[in-house]
Length: 613
Image 1: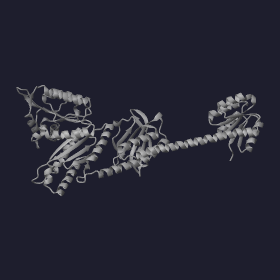
Image 2: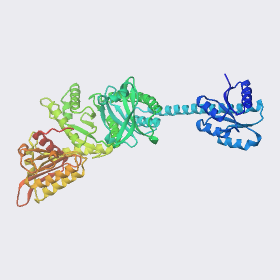
Image 3: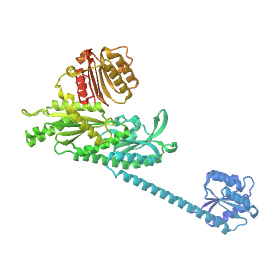
Image 4: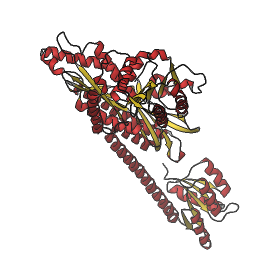
């Protein structure tokens, strides 16, 4: 094998043959060219380690040849051959890129020595580049190892999701990333878990099914390969890299990476790096999901089979972090059972445990799959309601009460006193933003429930109309303009809080109708989430008619003017008499949350209006 391939360029045949002979004897493979033009043509077709060229030649001289070669092959090694009088010109040529120069006349030792030094430097440079590449590869492997080790250092999904997105962004130089993870290993739904960079969380799907993925993602899902797709954002096109987290043939997560640094496109190297990291990430996700399933099984009360309060606290803390990051709401419920001590005394231990199991079974049937029921004691229970506002929590409280009533769980056997259930709820962030504060709200509202005006009324199965008449017996005379002022203030306040969801029942009568119609237009303009039920004859002149549910006055069983609001923020009820006495207008109003909640749901049942959590 030759030491190197050399191209010798000289317009004089003697020097061409001299160089060829000397170098061939030393083990080099030599090809010659008689001009700069011929040399350039040869270099277009073949590669040489070294070019040896004379400086003075007709046409393209040695200096020009160096310049032309360096334009095409910047790394080409070139030796300039020149006479003593042209040394200055040769030095200038070296400034243009020539590696070395030798003087005529030269001997074998001078020529081969120059080439040996060039080849030695070339070998050292290549070895240095190889070592640098190996070092960079080792550093990359170590960096990947550190990030992968970070994945396996936690079994909690929330911090794991953050580390996964961060690692994928580092591997691909992406500035934005979003991650969806399955709820459990048998699930086909992906839930939004983490985000990094400038991401509009409210524009991302919180949950999606595998079946919702288009055909273009079949490669992603079933072959476990990443794919690059266009990303439309605010009318401007972009590029996103979708990466599956696949373990044992099952995709447990999907990451979307975007906004690559310097507006570069995602290359094959990015995809390979992301897929390698995602492979480790998928294993970490599977471990976390298995641990969570085991944790849920182990953190159950042995008697009731509900979750323990300690586990409930941990889940709520995680929910606070998640809700704060993604701008979600959630609610918590506390249920206390009064009179349980007497029931325990009247039953054997086995019978009482069976009753507790039946209680928890019925409560579980009232809740959704995402809700979490925990036992604080035999007589006290907590419920976490993810992504549920105050109105949704009230709906679930009613459902819990109804399920216990229908299951006759509270009535007991003959001779046993009836149990009383007291329920309270609190909502993040409306009522509080910390776990201790939410617990304080729950406790305070339990006490409010016990001392509420509702507890002094004989409610039973009485319809809404009967409740109104009972409450109007407590009415006090007020100025006739007060109902108008309060109605206007309430509707203005709701239009200023358009994101708050609530239920507003209004029976305006003739006196309040103009004010109510104006308020409806303001609510529609603000795109408020308040659901409005108008107990009145339908009006055809209302521009925002589609935002109102109309109910005939006869359906409510009363023609008394009233206003009821329940939802995020303070609850409120206002009831008025028709006629004004000498002392003023008969008027009852309250912000008793327990009483207002009862009135709202009793009216909802009387009117047959469905309500969902």
